Length: 130
Image 1 (cartoon, rainbow, N blue to C red):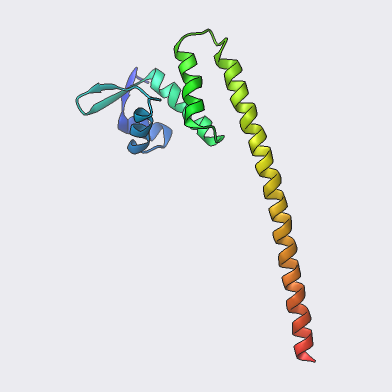
Image 2: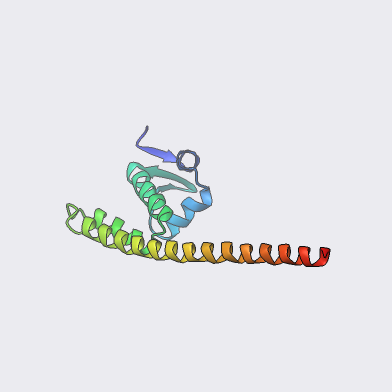
């Protein structure tokens, strides 16, 4: 892999659209080298995009991702970045667990409602047949 790659290659490598890359650039998460209208993405951009997409998959906010990535950029030897990453990840994990509990309750309630409706139909079918 070369040191830089164009927008098309980045899109293919990470299965994203050019619009997505431009959005992350606008949000100051990616910093491609600009040559007129052409963008060249560095190894650093590729690493950042990989982390952005992973964080997005976990539902981590772009602002939290920016803070974590910025800590990496100041070369803090990970003394600040790793604890901040853990803090953000633990918060998101707690949120996801709450969402899962809410979803589980909703599934149980919906399943019970379906069963009540089926029982009602069955009872009414027998009553109308009599």
